Length: 384
Image 1 (cartoon, rainbow, N blue to C red):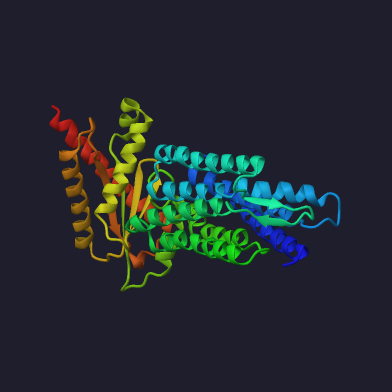
Image 2 (spheres, helix red, strand yellow):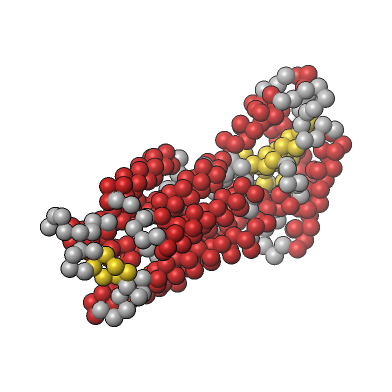
């Protein structure tokens, strides 16, 4: 492929990444590690595409070409393991949602990159096992060690692949296939780039992978609560309106609205970290009581909302009983110094009432408040 065609292809790829960047920057959370890692992957990919353009300036048509060629090829080998390192960190955090453990992963990843950089510098300075060399005509040639960065890249991509496959059950199908797909275009690109000198397959294939991840995972994160991993209020509002619009006299649904009793006391007594932990525990407990197709969202603060395809009040009460039973078993086995307790309001949607989403939520919220007062009265009586 000619220099001009390579430049056009890389500039086109950079333009696609800039579009993703400007769109993503509107809604990404500054404190979210997954969003930070994704943006870093975007930056590094754009930088590598620009560096790749410089490395394509073979020949001596202009005096500046040798400088471009030298800088471009050196930086290409220097930076190439950075991209898969960031991807491994992104996958790890996306699956485990443990910021501390993901940050600990940075240390071995940094060591790999330092080893690659050291080998590159030493080989180029002393001419032993060079990654590449440029002859007197300013023509780039692969050296015997050019496979080192490629090997590191493939190894890291395989590590990410293993992490994804081993934790498939904790991922939804959409997330699983999006994460798996990310590695396929670059992996094919690496093989093609080794086989066919002169064409930038790998970097341009990464752009396709980033686009798929953005559309299927990062875009999905707009509707996900960062702390609990549940659906957020925005998703709940849209889903509830859709459920009401699809209702018929023969096909209705139910809502359970609940909150954690004395959550403020847990926060004030034990600190916000314990409070966050209580919210995460409550979310996991509720999910364990529901079917995979049931909808659950964090309504706000310590409140959760469950939407079920249930049209019979007795079936709905059976779900409420199951939640209370799970909660009781949790508290018996729990070693924490506080107990989790819920107040719940629940109702089957009345099709004949034609209530909108806001009015139906208000109806269930009143029922939840009544349940909270009843629980409080029981506690006060038992303490006398």
